[in-house]
Length: 270
Image (cartoon, rainbow, N blue to C red; front, side, top):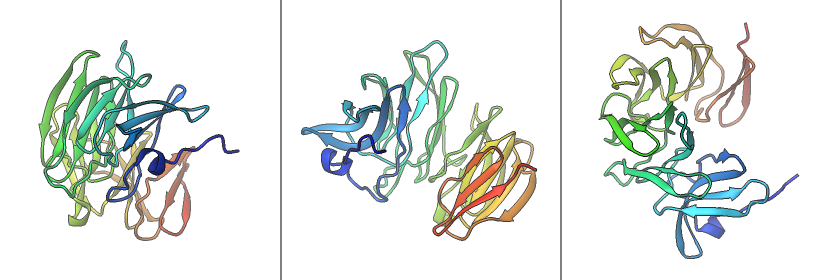
């Protein structure tokens, strides 16, 4: 049963950008938060929140363009939670209840034909961001009152569109431009130092039970150990067709992957 709907393109003049509108919403309590890069009643509305029950606009905040990363929850211990957005110009931390901007920083390419597409990775009170187009990656720390840059570096884990995953102090993700060839890499979260690098087609990675589940855009599934010591593969199989771009999902040992024509489920429970 449809409860409500809002036409963001019509009501908020949300632009389509290079690749359409692909940012996922973030639900916090009774609010649904979105990055739309639009306007509302003639005023900038880069970020918006709707009442989950009714669809009514709760607040609109910030100005600028939307991008392709999805917002995430930043919830440091003993601190009020924030919604963290990686938008066209950089990143913004806002109070989810009223849209008050707590911090923002420029972090984007000087190239116009560029995107910020990998979503932030939150670990405690720190968050990791990464982008291609000569941007690189960085780690920041939020105390609840002050934002601190831990490091920024290029050439370590420059993510084009696939979001990396974190496990036991290390990040695993795809480095490099999709059209120029990529590598799956492991880097240390604390300093960004590369632990190992494995060339492979572009793809996505999720993690479960200490295992990396890598799905390449050519449709190959690779299951490997999430360890900084070396690339240790346990299993590989062709599970979908070519041009597999959608992020896979895992539920109760069942791995779901979708290419342009079909949805496939692989039983990994054994």
